[in-house]
Length: 361
Image 1: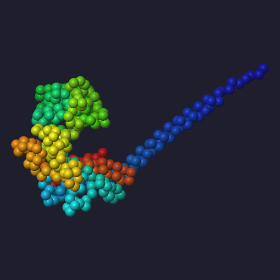
Image 2: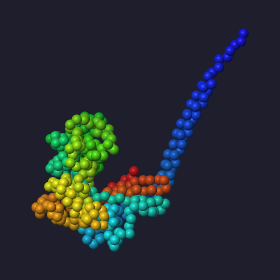
Image 3: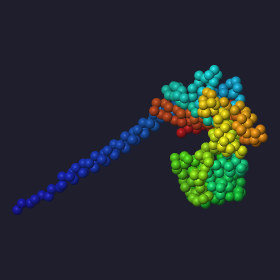
Image 4: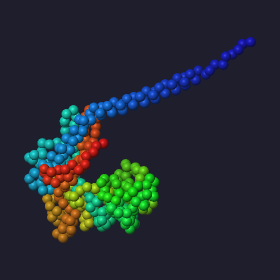
């Protein structure tokens, strides 16, 4: 009697080999990825000191440029065509030979970007100006019924007590959310704090760029509905609160650096007047930050934007032509290591420019 041996399918061996190769490939890929991370961490550690000093050097350069700008002839104002703002500056002044981009130092290079905070409204200064806040929210497209809710909630977030404004929200409201948190009851330090406030959704805060900034766990915890709504189709201004407000500034708007959107938020400034201000300051080519700019040298020159003397004086209470608070961004690169430094500067005099904050990411 013949006994036939049952043969295993030949395809099974191939499958086993392929599975083994796949698993080994995953292990090799994970190891390679881990080694890449370890190599980058080691490289960053080796370049740590040099990157920090390059970042600080960039901040010191910003301080120097801002100080020298005040010493130049006919520089009783700050504008977008000046060197600190990335403009060409004057051809014969002391800053003409200075570059703020791709500055070589040591084994790397850095670039400096300076933005004045006076191009935006100070949210802490105007929190009780319900006319200005209301106009801003309506121009951004917030439903009229929701405007008093956001205004009252901003006031409650900043004031030092737990007494709720009409339509506002204090800690008892925020404690009912998941996760719970408390009202700050103090000045806003970072403009992103507005996202914690009742009624301020990503659409309201970021405006047209909201899709690039998904809600955090705190915004997701807030109940949806008409009290959190933005109607972007009805917005006259294509912007968000982040484009209009800053937490630290002199409290006045520099009419030489503010955007048309910000200028329109000033009570008494229509869309056409805001456009006229931009037309006046940008010169013949109609572009801010170029050689032919004609910055306003005083607030009184607002009369050239079609305003009466009385109208210019009323608007002038909100305006200036000088900036005092500046955000500095320094991008550092040493070999394959990169880091971004941030500083907040306050300029008192050409020789007194204070560093208020400094951090990096």
